[in-house]
Image (cartoon, rainbow, N blue to C red):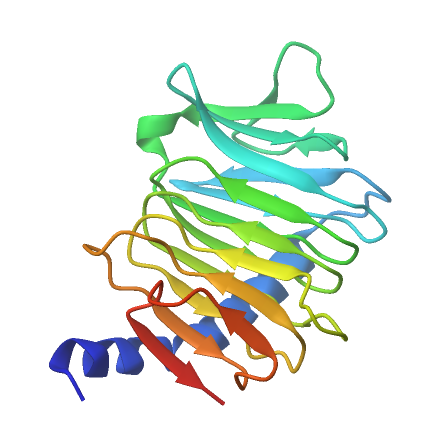
Length: 209
């Protein structure tokens, strides 16, 4: 095995429990709101936590130098470190983009979409439902705990730029594109080829179950 691949395998072995722990922590931290997603800031990290029963379409972006979270299909509740923007229930800002080092997003149930339009590292957990997860130009970790139950897969993972880790070992049908840059080193932990469809040559290292 190539030394670089070996190093990433060792790293990724810790990724699954780490992401699982992230999901559990964020679930416990969520308040008792019935519908709106919660956006908070902890140090240099932004935490986005969806609530049960909501379909979320969330985008993380640079808004004139501010870190912005927008959910077009769910209202947002700004927690500590974040404020509602311009009285819009769908937009929250959490300080200067340059002061944010990581995005942590837990989408919960329903058919959700998360898009990272920044170079900030992210951990995005899809949860139940038919989800679409899009990384940014930095290093991302994308995970979905359940796949689609019939081919072709409707769950979509796109790493885009950066050195990404995609974990699609969920026993369902998924579609995966790690990204196009030959300068990146993307790692994919996938189900068998009969379940997960991967864009050819998009992932530098693939390990199937």
